[in-house]
Image (cartoon, rainbow, N blue to C red; front, side, top):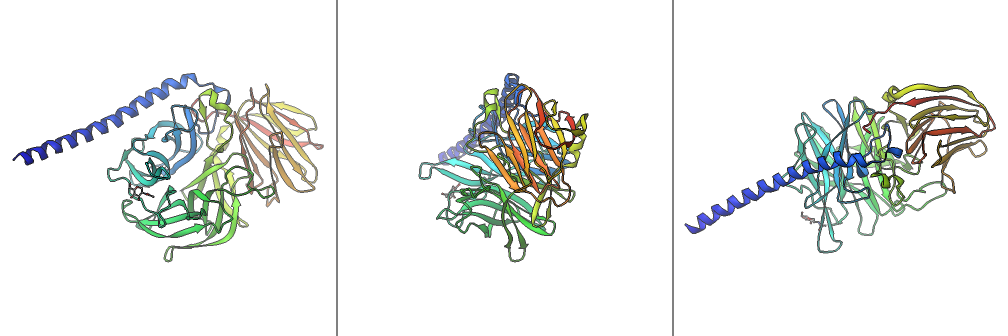
Length: 489
Ligand SMILES: *[C@@H]1O[C@H](CO)[C@@H](O)[C@H](O)[C@H]1NC(C)=O
């Protein structure tokens, strides 16, 4: 009798503490939203983007869960709301119907026993499912455990973590580095790739399969460094594009080689072919950087209406974030539409970005040493004679950051120079258009050359809007627009 009664009491206690923990989580969410709304008032707007997604307050890194669900695009991101430096990871959340006008949604995931590290999303009818890496502290070396967790939503806004978490805990070699699941559906099955490493520290990507997202079968090593491709492959993505398969990832540990791999960590891709019967990915084109700028990491893609879109963190690890004294840090690149031409991914700004064009500020020939001033959000279309030098200085009207964009016809390189030898450069052979399309925001510059065969994404911190000077020995044909705001202040 007593044991039955004790058992009943224990059951009641378990039920009560479960309800209490649910309530605590829901309460923590409400407090967090109050905190965010309140804290927003303290933000210094000088470097806040007008048309790039950024956290309402606090720190952001990788974009996560980029997906198209019930007619809306969703972007989540690694988020620490309580300070503008990295901290215990939440998932921030924004949505958009056109990839240009974004609204902020409540924080989607809060850390509990696990930090909510990077991951992805699938849309399944009215349900959206997030798969992310739960990172827990442990008391045995290496003092952390990474395994894969699920969360579900019926409304695309409120997410419930799955009670059966974690759902995927094992790597074939017991490597503790096991993160950034990218999940997709093919036929009736789900597939996920996850970043990991070999026991002798070579980056690799693991492929698993499931029919319910909950129990997973290891299939194969989709890709692996042979020793020259870094010690860890983070944030893998895998997709079909123009008849090929692309393995996109963020390798850590590549040594600089000439003009290449000059950032602390890289982002790039391998083009190949893949067969769902054998699960074999056969690389055909070696690793190439996706973007040649200073600040581009953790790129991730989604597909909608037959088009493949990419976003990335427009920042980098281990660099100063001047905006952190303003109450926030980090932003996401403009979404780009992808295609493959001549064994390279071309990136173009999404078409709907044209809707941000406001006043035409310049339209005609701009002679040597001519100067124009703009607001904080600007698009420039620049045409030049590529047999002569181009030298364009873009700087703050009231000082602050400067950047030079150059073309040298001798070496046929595009150069992005932030001064003090902080240079990124790459050879460019236009395959079509010769136009430079330049997007300037309050703390960023994105340069799309030609058809998007060469793109640079870099942070710049001008003060008081932009000033552009043509230092080239030739006249440039420039069309320039001030752009409208498309993200919350
Ligand atoms: C991480 O924790 C899970 C239990 O949640 C365990 O099954 C797994 O073996 C752990 N991973 C490592 C590398 O110890």
